[in-house]
Length: 316
Image 1 (cartoon, rainbow, N blue to C red):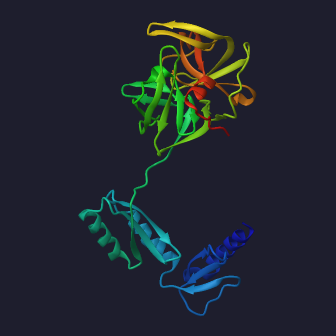
Image 2: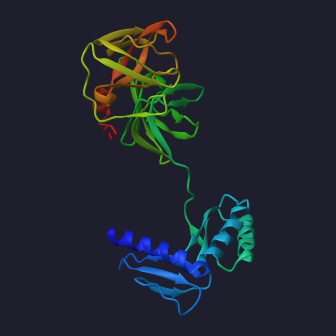
Image 3: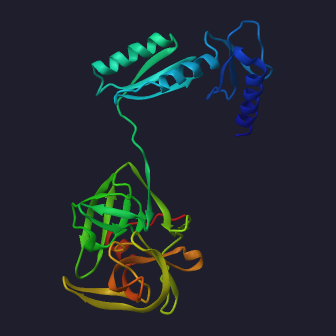
């Protein structure tokens, strides 16, 4: 790491001193030594190997800037300045390459001989974070994410049955319910796809997150807070444990009672307690009242969910 830092500083110095003759720089992964590319022979850089190249870094960046202005077909997955090969590399998904792709590549190559093409087998996709309290969507319904676990997240069972497709807060496909129980209990877990990364966070709805450190259970009378996609962040106290609630769909056992308000859409959202609210407590099940006049809300404790499905919380 110290060697890399020294080489990085040397590369920046070479870039400043060589001006338009600078063609880029890179650290050899085997030797750890820096190579500086130059467009004129006879130049030297103290502490680095020197390689003469055709294109300056300014020229390569200029070529890439022109490509940035071109509307690319979907099979063109990316383009970049590659200092080591002294080129602008365009990556193409060979599985979806078509006539429009070839036409775009021909135009790109006509701009500069520095353009090279590399075929890949996959196209990149945006990556999103899983965070407690954020909205999740199932068809026409909405619930809230409970807690990130390895491979997905937990939420309320009444939010969806096994096999139900789930989208994230941004309506991007997130995965499917792997298992779900309701009534009797009220819990489920969702196995997510590779576009989503489980994070140890709960949305506090004030621009900050709570970081989950564990799932130690809070005592009756303890302060507790919850996060949900309808009403955000609200707090109160634990009033009772192991309560059976008789919903219209059937009774649910083992719930914890609180005097915290909640409203439809908050279901499945996170409950936290402990120092810094770092201890996961459970996921919103149901209740009565609202966040204008106040209410009573019940949550399904998280530890039985983890135990039932053999899941591990993502902690930070």
